[in-house]
Length: 404
Image 1 (cartoon, rainbow, N blue to C red):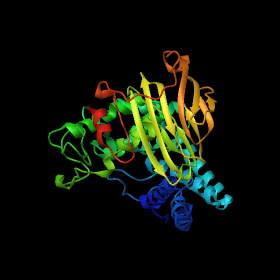
Image 2 (tube, rainbow, N blue to C red):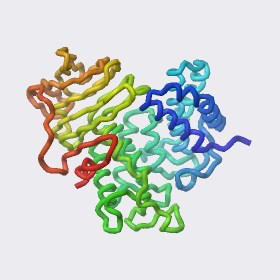
Image 3 (cartoon, helix red, strand yellow):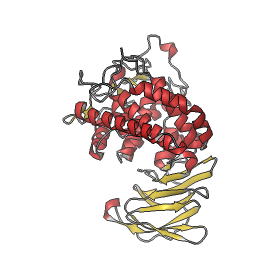
């Protein structure tokens, strides 16, 4: 009998990865490594002849129908494998073991796209025995990069948007409940599909409903409710059990920093990083956080989705890439040096403080802005609906401004 796939077997290793990513504490990873390997190998033992994990454990995040070659579980496993390979390389783990993990991951990806993708619907099925297109599995396929093309990401994003009700994004795999937990992953999936407009629209729709509805606390976020707005969460039999101050319902807080401002750590402690702002219809974002390497911050102005001004700072001794598709110009360092954007990107950017000088835009990024002066971004003082200020420490005024 095959062992049961369990969420703890992959979620605990993911927490280890997140801790290392922001702390840079490789000693912590080394201390947990044997447990990581045991947990991941236990999960990998559920892979059958199909190339995917065969799930025999029904417990998950309260969704229904977990089992078989489930797309959500296999996406999470694929993602965890990639994290394991990155951590293993960072601490000098046995490369032959990492190679076997990579092989298993590619097998999961290939099988999922062959057996579960519905080209007509533009979604992944929950498993081969149903036509149900779950919210969780499809957003996780995008988030984990289980998709084998950007086109699939974009089709999933577009398809999910058509399913929204007046109160949010439904989860058909959970009795048509609205799960802010899973919808938080949907926000990220829209950004990864280059659909910032959908991500912002869903934030305003679903989290705006939670803040505005008179039955809510109007200051915290609920665990779940029904797609018609009824304050009942179908996975539960007793309504009083539903949390009205639910930590897992706060997805926009990290989205503001990691996707809208686009400030991403790529390796332990931020030794390598990426800045890729995607503001949609927002006009201003200001964010920052610190790791053991030092402070990371970014402040960006935009107009109609086009970046018009930016300042950012990253710790000395780190390197990264800045992505500003369609822009021409350069990054001016506080030390007087300059790095030109090539095809809208600057690679191998040393840590430091920089100001963007925009010379113009290409046709791939909307209308031409003309020549910018390279002045620092200005705090936007217009309509609050287009203003956003984010930090890794607080939801605060930023999310309220976004939703107003």
